[in-house]
Amino acid sequence: MIQKIAIAGAGISGMSTAYVLQKKGYEVTVFARAFSPLITSNKAAAFWFPYHIRNDKRGVDWCTTSYRYYQDFMKDPSTGISMHQLLKVLRQGEEEEEPIWKEFMPAGSFGEVEPPELPSGVARMYDVQVPLIETQLFLPWLHDRLREAGVQFIQTNLDGFEQLSEDFDLVINCTALGSRELCGDETLVPVRGQVGLLAPGPKLPIYLDNEMPLYVVPRKDAIIVGGTYEPHELNEQTEPPTIERILNNAYQVFPELKQQSVIGSWAGLRPYRPDIRLEREQGTNIIHNYGHGGSGFTLAFGCAEGVGKLVDEGLLKRVV
Ligand SMILES: Cc1cc2nc3c(=O)[nH]c(=O)nc-3n(C[C@H](O)[C@H](O)[C@H](O)COP(=O)(O)OP(=O)(O)OC[C@H]3O[C@@H](n4cnc5c(N)ncnc54)[C@H](O)[C@@H]3O)c2cc1C
Image 1 (cartoon, rainbow, N blue to C red):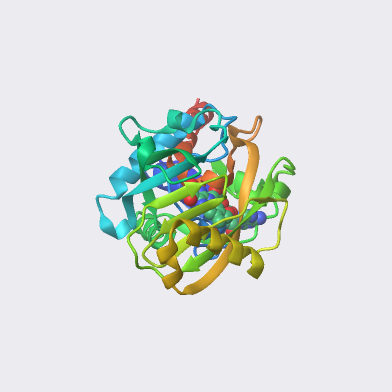
Image 2: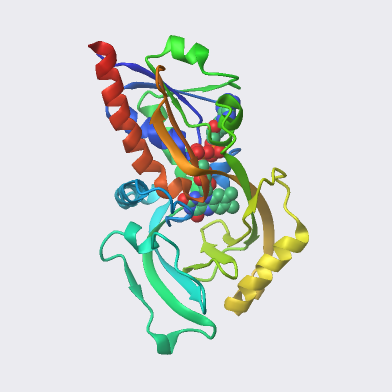
């Protein structure tokens, strides 16, 4: 018998969870106060790369599982996902992150640029193949596929999970920063990211230099140039001097970008938590899946599979 599941939240965490659970045959309803494009997930760059998940060993599995999902999705160009070259730069004296990000990479997906070809000031440069997820295309695509498969979407502002817990066999909490209030979780904090947008055009790699800091992401609708990492900052307005500084960083590395007109900017709030919360809350029928920080797309489908395993276990216990 199909079991009824409520998912709270319609960002990439909620939508990927809906996708996995619907495929498993569960009857899924998604509740959210906002949907794409009015959510943080639309503010992501969004390329696959493990970022700030160093404390979480489970991340290796989640990241590599998501990578495989994106490889599968990209067989259909209408998903807006494609494989892209990423150049990851380490500056002189810069420490490699722990655990080394390479642990997260599928075998054969990266190499290293030889020293004679390195730009000045660059100690190492990795050449990596990563999925680029064009959020403006993928989120609507995913939404449409879920609707066609019978997933219901209901707009509502939740102030707790009691009602959903009563009405559904299980509730999956994917409300990201909403969980600060819904769960009283103060370990979850906003980390603002500001980006500038340039007119699309030149063929570029994705470029990532945490030290500068700079990332450049050439999408079909814009070249996204980031960015900032501002903990506890809740204001979603961008600051013109900050955007100017970010763009100047990009012009240093890619002078040809000066030819591209500036077409906008935005800021989004990453839902950062020291450890991602993916667990069933004891004594309840609630599973939490939130706190993905700056890696929500990188982790999404791996975490959704993790939820799927807990759901299978949870429902078996209820039936017995
Ligand atoms: C500038 C920037 C660049 C980024 N780049 C990347 C990148 O390149 N790669 C990457 O992997 N990640 C990137 N990220 C991170 C990524 O955007 C997030 O990790 C991801 O979007 C989190 O998804 P989510 O579904 O958990 O949250 P959200 O997208 O915030 O969705 C939360 C959902 O919960 C709902 N909700 C919340 N509270 C309530 C409530 N009380 N009642 C009802 N509904 C509620 C919201 O309405 C929404 O539908 C970036 C983030 C930023 C800001």
